[in-house]
Every structure is written in structure tokens, then in C-alpha cells.
Length: 162
Image (cartoon, rainbow, N blue to C red; front, side, top):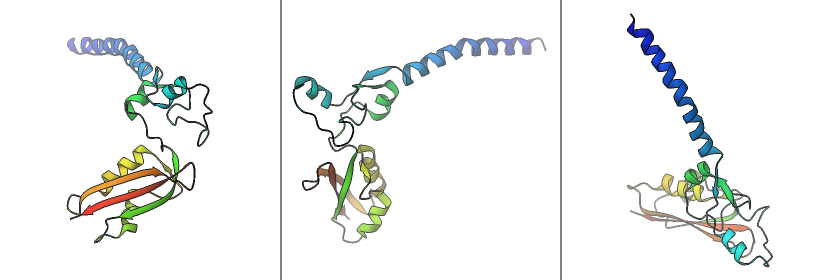
């Protein structure tokens, strides 16, 4: 019986000592700031005299033009630079390569809808959800700026069926 109180006491001491370490780790991950990996900040520093017109309120979707994001968000979203079409409105969706499958059904599954905001996460999700090795050899979601409508993008869903 004498061993049990010692075990509980040791557990309490370990918990008291580890709690600040967990808090420090949470602080470092959630509140410490890192540089935003977007290329637009480098262009802005190189050409401060240019007139920067945004598609929306900000030019940079990740940091809202502050140049800094949290370490947690940088780890979660990755270090690669975002696409220039990030967070732009989808104006038109075109499907190609569908012969056996109904393109409207495929669009419903992907979550791509005209009028929604296009993100890199949505592009990857659409490819991942739609790709079925039994149905398709390849799935590609291409995004390009809509020439007729500034600030909007066209999405092309391309598949190669088996």
C-alpha cells in the first residue's frame, strides 16, 4: 500500500513539470510568427513604386499583406507559395474527357461550384475525391484567370477514363 501514494505523487510532480513545457510548445506553435512564403512580398519590396491593385481587399490571401503568419499555419499549409488565383471567385467550370461518367455527377462530388472561392486546398480535394483507379487513369483540375472577367477564374476538370 505504501507504493501507491508514491506513484501518485510522482505522477503529480511529472504533470506539474510537463504542463509548462506543453504550454510553451503551444505558444511557440500558435503565436510565434514566421515569414509568409508568398512571392508577392518579394515583388512588392523590389518594386515599391508600382501601384498594387488587389482582387479583393488584400493581395496576399495567407497573411492579409502583413508579411507574417503563425508557425502553426505555415506548418499546416506548407512552405510553397500559393497560386496567383488563390481565393478568387470561380466564374466558369468546364469538364473534358468524360465519356462513360456524367460530368455533372462528378462536379457534384468534387464540390466545385461557380461563384465559390477557388483555393489550392479545394483543387487538391477535388482531385483526391474524384480519382478512382477503377474509373480514371488521370484526374487534373486546371485553374486559369478568366480573361473576360478580372478577379475571376475558370476551372477545367480533365479526366482520362479507363
